Length: 301
Image (cartoon, rainbow, N blue to C red; front, top):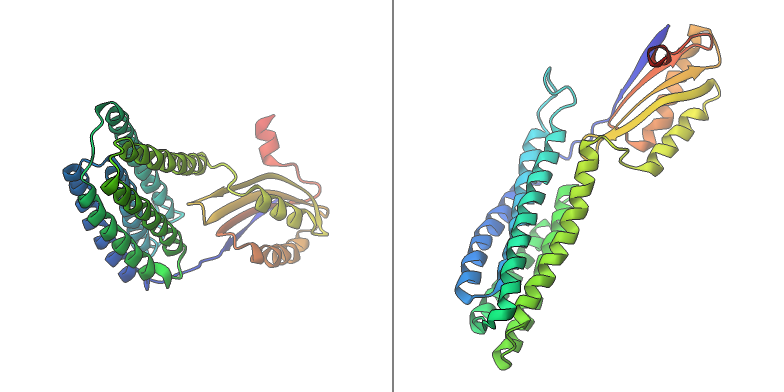
């Protein structure tokens, strides 16, 4: 005989952040176009690399907006866990676009070392100042945000602003010294920095797709909490995976040290109380009596 215990923990951030995200998206999207055009006109691969970085942020903000909308939709017969897992497709698409963009910038920059092309320093200077203002304003707009999306995007925008500060310094240097290697060197550095972060993010996204354990420490803590219940004899078929990197799902078979079905109710209450601090999004536990053979073991044998 077995019972299933289901637990749901919902955390609604509300839609107060949508207006801020929309404004920052519009600002970033427009400025990304300006960057690509400006990079082409000034012949600066460093600005083009910054444009690729800003394109990634624009796509990330678009994903955040879509997720904000989908987050309000209830689960249905087709998407029984809801729609949060769709955000992984956005992260995967974003990563692919950035990897392709970085490889293109790297190929252009490496050719510039041989061609010795000097970019338009004055044009770079004006674009860099505009970049500092735009990214700084966008970061300030999200500074008051309470959601995880806004906090993460705020750091990305601050990174972009620092990147434009570097371009600004480079433009001032090029105004006085004709170092043709400086612009491609900066674009290579920017591209490698973006690639490093994107590949790290891509690795985590693929782990989530494969339903790998999202947090080994949290997994161990949950196991220890469940195993520590007095009426629990053993814990097996324990699984923890994540819908989107934030909302986790846990399931397990829990063997009790009693054959009395009346022991189920207090055990279920204790499980709910113990797991409450962990903020697990969805839990499913199968309780097995002491003299009951696990049906999963029967299938495996």
